[in-house]
Length: 247
Image 1 (tube, helix red, strand yellow):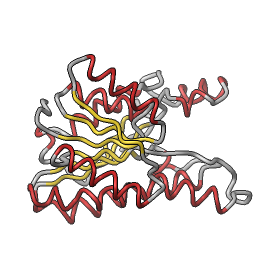
Image 2 (image 1 turned 180 degrees about the horizontal axis):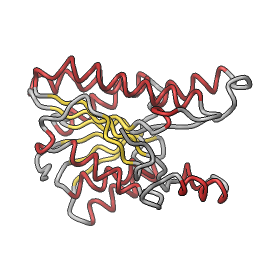
Image 3 (image 1 turned 45 degrees about the vertical axis):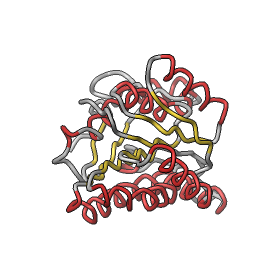
C-alpha cells in the first residue's frame, strides 16, 4: 500500500493518534504536512521522520482559527504542489454534564472537532477536484456512535463528523475522491491516560479482544483508507474498537 508521491496533511499531528498517523503515512512514502499548535513537538516529529529517510514539514496552526486554516493550506500547497490526503484528526474534550456545561465549552469542542474538519476540507477540495484524486479521512469516535455521559459536546462533534463524511463522499465521488471516517474505541493516548485506573479496567471488560487499542491500530486503518487499495470504499465508518461496538 505505497503512498509514494502523495502529499498528506494531518491535523492534531503532535501526539497520540495524529502522530501515529503521520509516522505511518511517512513510512508508506507520503510527504506529510504535520499540523498542530505545539511547534516544538512538530519540529521533533519532523526531525524524527527525516532521520528515518522520510519527508515532512511542520506547520503550526490552531484549527479553531479559520484564517490560520486558510493560510496554512495555501502554504502547504505552495510548498508541496498539492494535497492528496487530508486527515482531520484534531480534537479536544471539555467534559461536563449537559445541565452544567458552559456554552464556551460546547463551542470550543464543536469548533475544534467538527467545524475545523469542514474548513480544512473546504480548503483542499478544489485542488483534489482538479487532479481527480483525493482521500479525506475524518477521525470520529465510538462515542459519536453510542454517546457518552458527560460528553454531550464531544459526542455531538464526533457524530457530526460521521454525517459530514457521508455528505462529502456523495458530493465528490464522481471525481475519484473518497471520504471516510475512522471511529476509534478505547485507545491508549494522553487523553485516556488521565482516566482513573478503575475506569480503564471497566472499559477493558467491554472489549471482546480484551485489550486497549494503540494509536498505531488507528494509523493502520488511516493508511489503508488513504491507499489505492481502498479506492472503492467511500462514505464508510471504519470501526477500530476491538469489538466494543459491532454492526
